[in-house]
Image 1 (cartoon, one colour):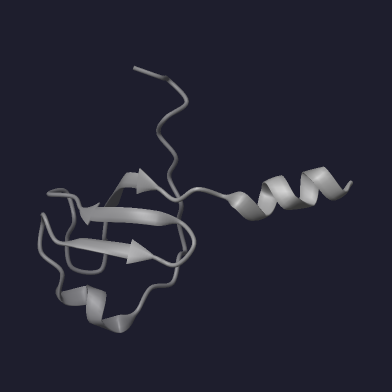
Image 2 (tube, helix red, strand yellow):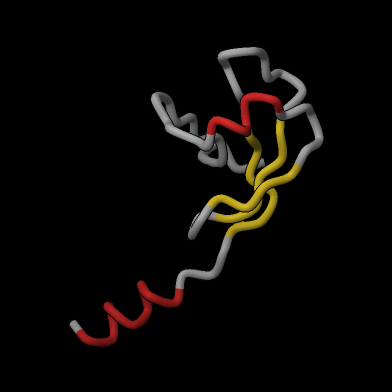
Length: 66
């Protein structure tokens, strides 16, 4: 496993409706990718695992123009 694969983000904001999420539910976070709710999630402490990263074509466009 890649030791740099774990990235923990704190103080993130999400839609209030995600508070009722249960482990295994899947969501797309805008411009980030697809995530599923981790079994370690608890009320007031949601944990999401990224399952698919979205392709970032805008970064390629900016790099080509620089």
